[in-house]
Image (cartoon, rainbow, N blue to C red; front, side):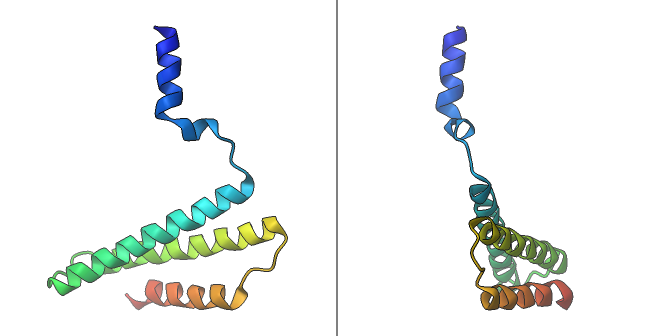
Length: 104
């Protein structure tokens, strides 16, 4: 029974056994938060097209905070690699997320 439990643990959660580098952690954080923010904004767009304004501002702020946090993770990932981040793109994204955050 113990062997079965151990085997199932490794089969069900293989990601837990893989070691992530600090770079992987920051890049995964960047992609995860960027995707979450995009999904929230798409949901808001659909709701607005359907005539609903329910919690639009609060959800926009959540998306913006996720986007801003994602930018920070991307900068850290570039720093970990010893490379210069694409600062103009990051600044542009920063302005866009700050605009979304402050519009409501």
